[in-house]
Amino acid sequence: MEKKVYLDNAAATPVRKEVIEEMMPFFDAEFGNPSTVYDMGSRIKAVVDVQRAKVAELIGARPEEIIFTSGGTEANNLAIKGIAFAHRKKGNHIIVAATEHHSVLNSARFFERLDYEVTFLKVDEYGLVDPQRIRELIRPETILISIAYASNEIGTIQPIAKIAEVCKDKGVFFHTDGVATVGNIPVDVKQLGVDLLSLSGIPLEAPKGTGALYFRKGLRLMPLLHGGIQESGRRGGTENVPGIVGLGKAAELTLQELPQKMRHVKVLRDKLVSGVIESIESVKLTGHPETRLPGHASFCVQAIEGEALVFMLSSEGIYVNTGSACASKALKTSPVLLAIGIPPELAQGSIVFTLDVTNTEEDIDYVLEKLPFVVGRLRSMSPLWGKKETAQASS
Ligand code: PMP
Image (cartoon, rainbow, N blue to C red; front, side):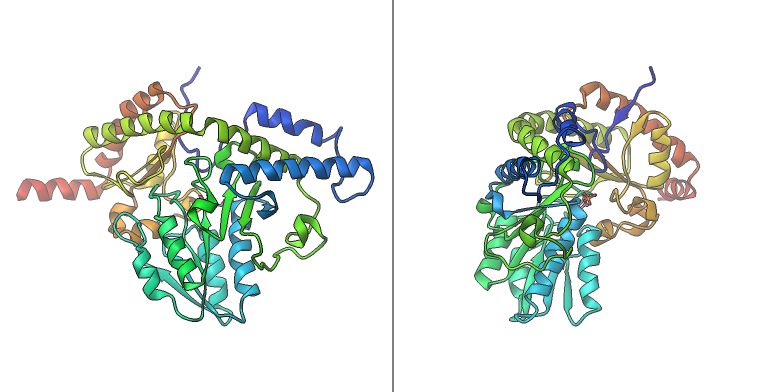
C-alpha cells in the first residue's frame, strides 16, 4: 500500500466512526422536523437540545447560549454582523486583528462600506496582539472587538482572558474566533470572559458545514437568517439535525479525549519542528515558539514556492498546507505572514502542518526523510536559491 501521511487537519478531518453511527438514524428512521408539535418532532427537538448541552459543556457555556450554524464562517459572520447591526445606536467602530480569518476580515470590511469604521490591529513578530494597545484604541463609539483565539496559519495563541478584561472594563463586546482552537486546547468561555465565541465541527472530527456560536446570555444579536423561531429566533431555517447530532457527539468525545490528544500531538510536533530546523537550512518557524497550538507547526522555507512544495509532497503521499487553508487557492502572499513582518519572498515559501491524534512517529520520520529532499529539488530549480549561494560565496 502506498504511504499516506495526512498533516492538514485544520483544513479537513475524517468524520469519526462513532460520530457517523450517532448521526445515521437521523437521516431516515428519525427524520422528523424539530418544530412540529407531534411526537416525531418533539422527540427530535429533545435530541437537538441534548446536543446543545454537549457543545455548551465542551466550552463551559450554558445550553441556551449556543446557536448552531453551518460552520465557523457563519458563526463569525453572525457574531460580527449580529452585534454591529444590533448595537449601531451605541456606536460604529469595530476593531479586528489584521491576522484574522477571511470570514472575520471580510465581515469587518463589509461594515466599512456602510457607515462604520474598522481598525485593523497590528500584531508583533509572533502574531500576538497587545491588550494594552487595544485599550488605547477603544473609543466611545467602539462596539466590538474580534480577535481569534489562535491562528490557523501560524498557531499562535492570543492572551484572550487579558483582552476580555480590557473589553469588559471599557464596556465593549468581545468576540473570539475559536475555530482553530476548540478541539485543540481546553476552552472555557466563562473563565475567559468572552461575549461570543465561534467554533467549527472540522477540528472535532464532526462533518464539515457544522459549527456553533456561543453568545453570552442576555446579549442582543441581530439574526443573519431571518425566518422561523428556530434557535430561539436567532437563526431561521429547519435545523441540520444529523449535522447537529454529529457535532454533539464529537463535542462529547473531544471533552473526554482532549488531554491525551494534546500530549500526543505535542510530542510529534516538537519532533517535527526540531527535525525540520536541523535538516533544512534557511527555514524559519513562524508564530510563537511556545504559546502555540500543540499540534501546529508552520514554517517559511527560503527560495521556494509553498504551492510547489505542497504539490510535490503530495506526490510522496504527504498532505500539508501552505498559508491559510481557505486562502491557499488564491495564490497570493499570506496577509498573516506579511502582518508578522515576514518579507514577501520568504512568505511565498509557507508550509503548515496540523497534526491529529491518529498521526504517528513513523509519519513524522517519513516527513523528515522526504522534506529535505523535496526542498532540495525545488531549490535546485530556483533562481532565488542560486542567488543566495552566489551571495554567500562572494561574501
Ligand atoms: N476561522 C478559522 C480560524 C478557520 O481556520 C476557519 C477554517 N479554515 C474558519 C474560521 C472557517 O470555518 P468553516 O470552514 O467551518 O466555515
